Length: 151
Image (cartoon, rainbow, N blue to C red; front, top):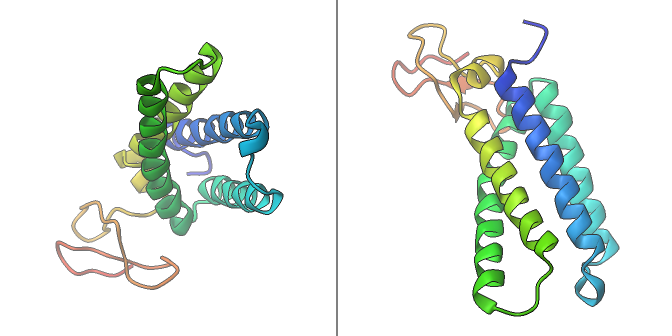
């Protein structure tokens, strides 16, 4: 299997779109703009996760899926706060917040599909049960919760 399945491609494109949306929102922030170090760290982390997803790295899958859920929920809360605040917000900003939230939550869902789990080698070869449990710190090996197999 040399090409990633559609679920991994969709997740990668959704994460790239979310990163671009967040970058645009950050550039428009004005006085509330984060320091360049924070922006550089976020850009580096995003690039590492995207590269790791395409490189079939389980640790990138874990971080990409976890951060997509966490940041997607943060964006939903930010969008809800912007709507409840009632202040003057540009419609494009509200639409972009919603788009970023949808992209992040979509990436989370796509990385949880069985085809994505198979791409990252997260299906137990002994009992064919999906497993998301790392057997070591860098997620190079996986432990099956059902049968205890480590691969």
